[in-house]
Length: 51
Image (tube, rainbow, N blue to C red):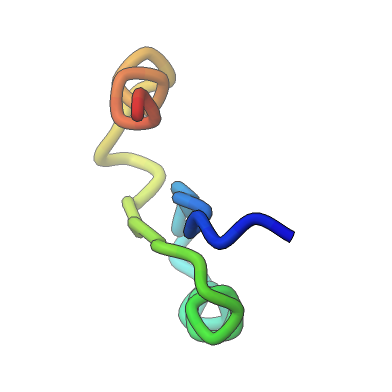
């Protein structure tokens, strides 16, 4: 298993459950970035995910 942390972009659709998911992902070692659905465009999301 790889020890590299996964970077995950989570799109928040104004649903409070998204932060529960983020917390679970972080417990598994992921690095999460949460962005509101109306605060980002698809091409901006693509640019954010360049590692």
